[in-house]
Image (cartoon, rainbow, N blue to C red; front, top):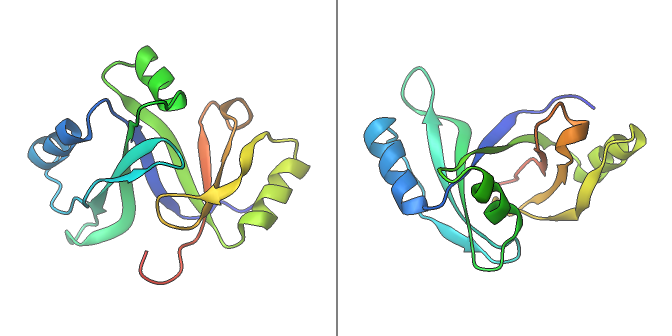
Length: 146
């Protein structure tokens, strides 16, 4: 498996609205996408673009993740970390099914089957105990306007 581009850093938050204020007013974010619900995963998400040295978006984003009612994984994370915090790292791969097979071949625990993620492409997660303590999302590289 070759390390792909870091697509985003997932940050769990009890309030996307408050996190938007933080990233805009404290961190100086200038391009914050509209939040949207992802009911299949039980979350609301909002992407914050990070700038390159020239100030233009560099392609890496912060993904703010707020649980929807009934979500247990993000809610559990927030019970342990009430203010929120870094939840996962997401790397791109050209072929999600090949990546899944390769990780499984290495004995890594894939958490569920590939499913559509917030960018509209297939994703899966790898157990943090198999990934140096970091919950890792693997995402098929978006095609087109994502």
